[in-house]
Image (cartoon, rainbow over the protein chains, first blue to last red):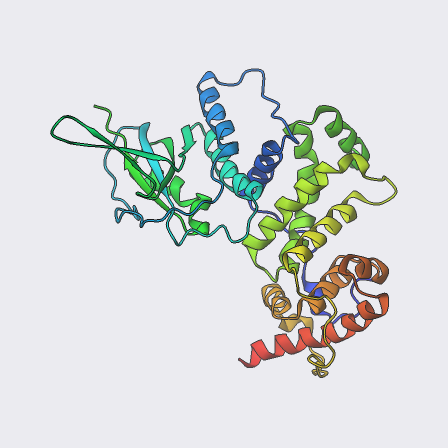
Length: 197
Length: 179
């Protein structure tokens, strides 16, 4: 017997609750990342979408939750004014991690699933061009009297990876960035338009 | 008359193809119940419920081939959800300390005075052991023996925590109304 009395407050709660749409993408991304599910592509898949799906697949290995040592830049995009850019403008979403970045005990596969789920959703809309995780090694070329001087540097800015997306304008690009799981982990995302010239 | 493909047939199709379409049929049928359970167990914390269901599906798909048809797939999946939730609590015991928690009996009230959201939030304020028994037995209909198995407690403890949990829930709802 489930509800013992007509006055049982539990009787007000339905057993089924509609899950958020993002949950499906996140689950599928985890299953794909672990090789448990493959994608059945439709026979007439639009050619333009193929690079996006390839980019989404790259993201299976994206982000394992390292914390970088220095502070993020101050140019965090929050509520960018419309720039009047043409439809289909390209934007770089730059992902920074500093001391505030905290995977909160999530496993590597859980982190991969979070990012890959977001990327799969963007790829499905045709807006994702590329996504890459950056390694920790930094080789810095600085101007010198006899040309550029190469300086290996272990610590630098906290840029940990990037995505290239297509969006009608900066507001739309910011909206894409706002949905990214990076924020939930304390990471910062900077949105920069790619100058077509 | 509605014809449903059986869960066993959906599982067989998925195991044969291992693709997102076959999985999608299973997902659409069973995720609302899994998400509802996770939402109640986590006290209405949507991000936590999201992660519990995500992890539960991964574990379920890993061992779908071992699913035994004599049990209901929805019960099996919800059991995995409950296990994932319990693991996330790590060191919190499901057996509520009687010395620390002896809720008094509040006056009986009509359910019409409560809002479902208030009930979910009140559940979230209860000791996890009370909440888990109330949710699993009171909403999802698991028998005490199964609740006990899922939570690692005795059947008698499940029954007594159901009784005390109901009092604690009403108290939590009363506190909210007074506050």
